[in-house]
Image (cartoon, rainbow over all chains, first blue to last red; front, side, top):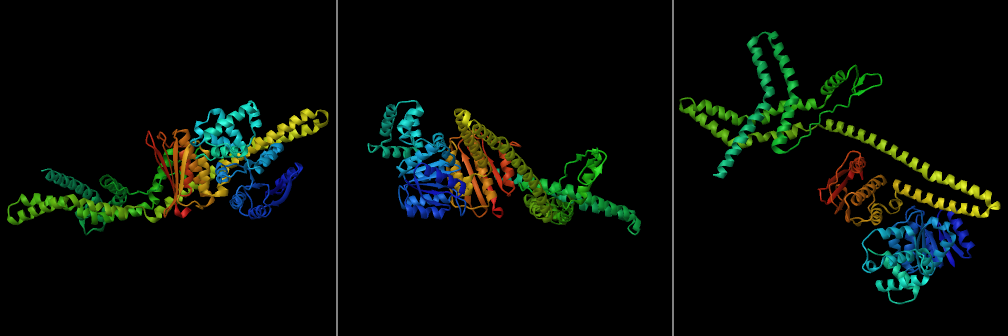
Length: 215
Length: 420
């Protein structure tokens, strides 16, 4: 995969590049400011990019804004946002265009390199990778969506894990259920959410977006 | 009939009030007149006979000026609901020093009683309100006093005139009665504008009050800041710092065990990773408590929106200007204020829905937080709401709470323009 890394702190940027290259992917460009990030995303159209939220020149949400701008110009451009803190507000903004290929994780998710690279690959493939904290907060707040309130508790927890970006197999392991049981839950869940048969990745993304975008 | 009755009542009440105003405002002139009469009675030509009346005039005026002013303030507040701030200097607390002496803000005294007495007289003597009170006691008899004296004077004329034979006397008496009845409902009313104009605190007194207020606020802010810094230090010391030490220990042990017991070394490394994650989470919480990152990244309105999403409550946020920019300390105070109120709505009011409204108008910034909970919020000293009021007061901000039992609770935070 061709990857762009946007991070202003040298140590983190360097470590990230080394980690990504250790897994056999290619870092085509690095950026240290918001405008640089937008430029790099425009020029390279990477398979996926890793972007920090807070970057110079203003030390505000430059990185996030650059990523949103780039996705506005190139819909579905896969972006994985890494941050020291996660905010539902940002997660919603990232998911608002409904085109998938979005990740939003805490920086410490790189501690588990396998899982981090897995998330990166999922986002590159048009899926989502959301931090469990965002999902936990979504679970505990807001009023349930039209389709979502018809889900059983088990289907709901399957959906929550799906939003984290886990595969059926991984969800099965987490809930101590067989993979076929999980796929039964997902099928009935797609039916209740009114998501018609399509290719599986697309359905998963749409289910997750329904879930994360609830008002 | 009823109109006649109410008119009679108004005349009666007005007459009594006019008599009271006349009596109060003529108190000091009466002392002067008494002193004058005393001097003349003792011998107007002899200078020595004027010594005692002079002492009487000075002492009487000084002693009576404050009670007269207090009385007028009381009457105006009672009859017209116009509250005129007194603005007298307040006595600082008398404290006992380690030497056993009492300090009253001016001097050391041997006993508490002496200290209080000394303080009372010093404050009384140096109070800038004295000058205002003296001026008022001079002005009020010539204005409100004269007018308020009309009805009693009219009645007196009627009593004297009607009791005597002769048309002229009777005519004067009748005229007096008419004047008394006609002006009774209105004669006392002049006391209000006069009191408002001449009895309010002078600019010097307002400034002195403001200095006292600011001194208290500064002390408050300093204490609160120091406490906050100590809390952060304690959190870092017991949390992240201790965790990093444990992390270093695990890594050092793992390094040692790498060759002899690789399985245990790996387990230790895993522990170290978990420890690093935990300390990061702790640091994140700490930072959120000091200065929420989203506030730095997005400003107040989006930070409140982010907060609203995190609260387990249906919160609607509205702002007339999404890119509201304020000074960082004010943004922080307002943010934590809203956070406190929404937390209260969840924890105490058991609300299910809340509304936050941020508006920047001519007068300053107004933030309203309303919930549909069970209400009955009260402001205990040392409680969250009292703390919020204190934090807003640093910026001359105010806090208004309406929370009837049964709800809803509505809180309004207002920060004046000058401090924005």
